[in-house]
Length: 276
Ligand code: SF4
Ligand code: SF4
Image 1 (cartoon, rainbow, N blue to C red):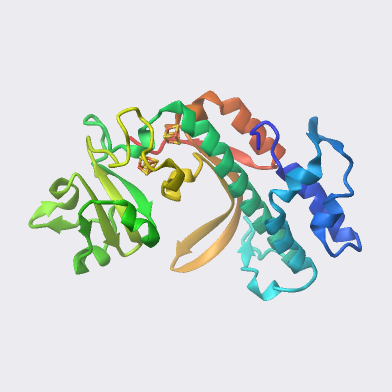
Image 2: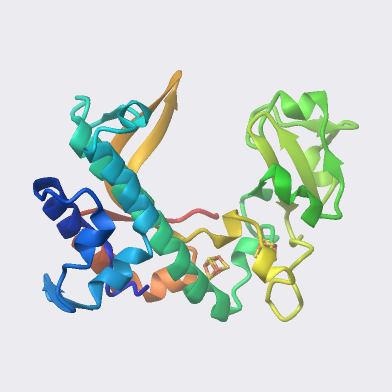
């Protein structure tokens, strides 16, 4: 996977060929692509090999063309508020999944060697934020030998809600510098100012890298082909943007490459600062 060689243009071509072809199997169709293929100035060598890395996502698309699983396809609205037709919704969903998969892998090799610890530490003393929150899955709880705050009060609120949760009359993030909480939205690790994830080594690397949290594998370049909105009732809306978090040093270094990646994928690009 290479940020300069996004896989989506290749998948897009394959999907469009598949829609008009009599083939039932999209991955088999990929084997009929030439060994070297140029798309918008990008040369893909052995494109069918690249396609195999996202075969399960493309097979999900294929099942929709073959009119299986169409009931499982969620409703997606376009920017104009109109519901997308079945094919456009299936393509948008497939694109979201393929970009998530690709950027997650790209993140691992961009972030790992940097020795940057921004995602693993609480705010600095001069920061406006009091704490950072790192979502933790239930099955990841065993990774932490930290206080687990699972109170009726915590389960009724969220970390950023006002008024903030107090424990023994003290703001929760002041009571424990690092702890895991069970909120109304699920578990999260709260790192207060000056604190750090217990797995962060002095060398700046992660002690449990191969088992690190799912969220720690996520890129700082997020595909938002489809956005989930929760305004009273959950709905999916087509956004077609790449969101890149400006705090991250590799995002700053690769600004041009990220913008080019977005263009090749037919998306707008937004750079956003997350931590203040
Ligand atoms: S688990 Fe590892 S990568 Fe994740 S926050 Fe902790 S030290 Fe960082
Ligand atoms: S800010 Fe970027 S480079 Fe730093 S730890 Fe987070 S993802 Fe890695």
